[in-house]
Length: 423
Image 1 (tube, rainbow, N blue to C red):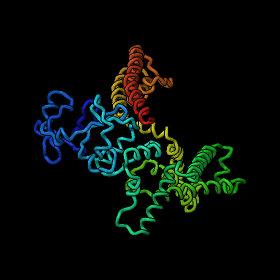
Image 2: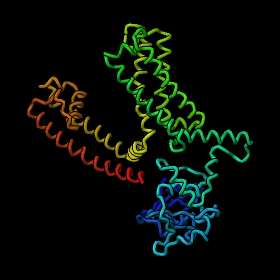
Image 3: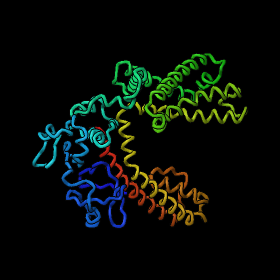
Image 4: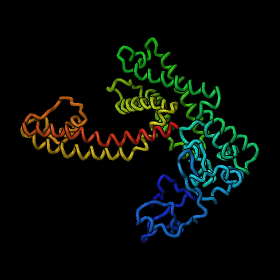
């Protein structure tokens, strides 16, 4: 299956998917594609694109601040009440020079606008100010009532519609701190409690304060425990309300931040249960071993609370999306690193193992290779033979080149995605 593009054009007409079969591109119904002058590619690609599913006279070019899109008039004309669906309204935006309808509008939002024309459903863009998206919808004439279709259907009773409307408002309240002053205050409280929770996590490891958190007879134990209970109660209420008001239960669990929320909450309740049932000291492994292990694992999972900060930062969300878009390059880097480490670790083992006890296994040699090519150089082990030193210099030099080449590609891709998302 392939995505057909024409230079900088996105060919999204009716979102047809084509499969290369018997030297031809055919759609899901078995129809071949018609040759189109807008489709660029090599000779084999042009030959394969025969008998287009969308006639040439039905194709329309739309230019959004320099980004070109190609779709079908039939997709646009399904919504005559909108700007692009009304021939009289859209013709004043036609540019003879560009041979396209030109709009100096917000580009990231138009992907969602075009998706509305193609599918009839809204998919608001991620990491875009809701007010900006609302203005774009208003410009293109997409009714605001469509926002309610996620929760309200035509055959619902008035009571049900009222409930769903309230559910939507609560969901927006939790997701968007700009929706109201109370929403901003709620998000501010969430950030405050996250900070306090992380401080507790750090101070619990300090020998001077450890007894105050673990010993029930300590002077400040009851106060610290009460504050921790209040924090966990807030996190629990926030999580449960999100779960109830989320449009789809399946989509709820697909959201990474919701999974992090439950992982940050569960350790508190599991710890209470284990301590109450087994009467186990979290720092004393001499008691019930099973309960002790459970409590230690719970402590590890509390670290994920720090990732709750990401939800409140647009820039951090953009960085995460940029990293996600560069995942192919990152996977390539990891694969190359794996091949590099295994190969040169094995070679170093056979060079040094007879004279140097530090390199008495391939695993230890691989550790040395990783430390060397990343230019960390702990110095815990090093080659002593002439051949080992010479090969070590080669590994170090090649490691610098190895890291530099893919990193330039990754940084370039990351910068492009980051700047695009910030627009």
